[in-house]
Length: 322
Image 1 (tube, rainbow, N blue to C red):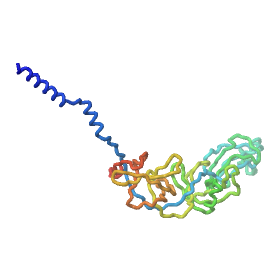
Image 2 (image 1 turned 60 degrees about the vertical axis):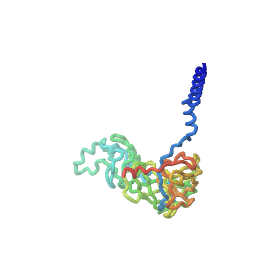
Image 3 (image 1 turned 45 degrees about the vertical axis):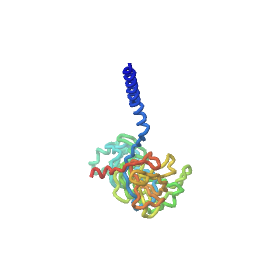
């Protein structure tokens, strides 16, 4: 009689111990997730230091190519244009016959076919020659056309007077003067040395610009008229300045605030506002603050980083290829 209650008590004790030792797996997983903090990924960046470069404040303006000297080939008599007809773009030499005119009297009397007669001293064939070397720009009359005395037959460009027309805003006139050296940048990237030749005594009243002519000083390739180019003029003498690659300097949408990301330690970058100066094609001058040669500046991977951002320094791509 006494053994049955004891067995029942032992079973109850064993069941209670098993219940206390069991644990919900899902609840355990949630607890572990709450205890482990989330690890933020680090941005992969490359670093560099400020460099000392020779900079010059450059004034960049637009210009167009032009042939300011043009020669008109005109008929010296009334008559008919004889073949062959010249073509546009043809090179002509000084004294070269470009057009030939036969007077109407010569055509009526067929004097051109009687030139073998020694008693006939006038054939009625009039050559029209170019006054100087150049390029034939226009052909206004073709073979067979009837022309009047003084009528324009064609137009030639004087290649020796080829240049560029530069419009300088009146606010920048103090930086441009005749005889000044400059650089002409063609659309394909070629750079031609040049100088400021003349200043025209007129200004555009609508946009307030003064017109100058630029003459190339070296060998000039064959260029058409009205070709848009860029002209660079030095506003100051060369000077030493601290610079950073253009990709290292960040700015806002209005480009009124500039900053760089400086490496505070091996894994943290901080935002440092900067004052920029001259901006070259690949480098930007840093006027303030004055960085030391040991300050490590983020060159790539810096876009969109917040202040005190977690970063990981990697080697530059160029270094890995080497």
